[in-house]
Length: 93
Image 1 (cartoon, helix red, strand yellow):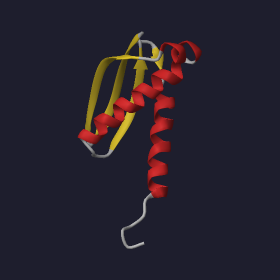
Image 2: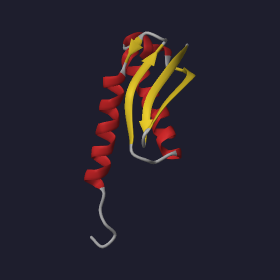
Image 3: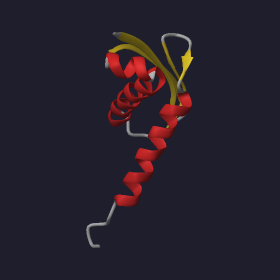
């Protein structure tokens, strides 16, 4: 099964909108569609961010035109950044 994800985000002072179609795990999508869509959107946004590693903010994330998963993706993004910050050590430590 495929879903369409739209991400509206800010990089520096510019607002960007990207949309793409992704294949999802059928079983996971049947069990919890929002969580599976959020997982895919997080992976995609992480790839976008790595290409343009400026200060970025997620404004809105939709899948299939009507399902808002902004909070789920934002939570994953914040958790990943917090864990990376907590595990970071300076080379001299």
